[in-house]
Amino acid sequence: MASGPSQFIALTPKLYEYLVAHGHNGDPIRAELAAETTKLGQISTMQIAAEQGTFMAILAAAIGARSAVEVGTFTGYSALCVARALPADGRLLCCDVNEQWTGIGRRYWERAGVASKITLKLGPAADTLKALPASHTFDFAFIDADKSSYPIYYDEILKRLRPGGLILIDNVLWKGAIVDEAIKDADTMALRALNDFIAKDTRVEAVMLGFSDGVTIVRKK
Image (cartoon, rainbow, N blue to C red):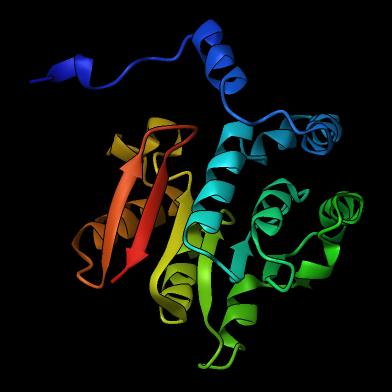
């Protein structure tokens, strides 16, 4: 039986390149969007990794998702991946506050032929979600925005998620800060609180995965 460090492998740059090359992560439109986002400088680290986008698309397609929501769109890479996985009449609600960054995404959504599936709402995501009628349901969700509001996003989405639906939550390991008790800023504390809550939430099944900056997958029972 595996134990200790053998339960995981540290990714060297060479091993990571191999990992990405051996998945279906090389779409040219996605690559162009990633390259344009990189030109924004340090803020470009907010974009998800290529393999994470592919992973999300596969999950959305696997559960037959037709209605999805994303909290935190940035330049639209994750939205592009998920929208492509939805059927022709599928709908993706994107919540963000930045018109400039999401404007980049809009151009690539048009080029990829998925713009008609996407509704972008600019404004506080908590307000957007709370304004949705109780009858509005989602099959798939991705949370990747301001960390201090994660618990609110989780609660508002879960109550509208259909049984068997999935929520993916990004940055749950917070570059390792999540286990450093000396770090007590609002974002880290909110992430810890949500991680602890989900671990005991009997309404769902959940697994935390250690790729990128940590991703939790929640399935509503």
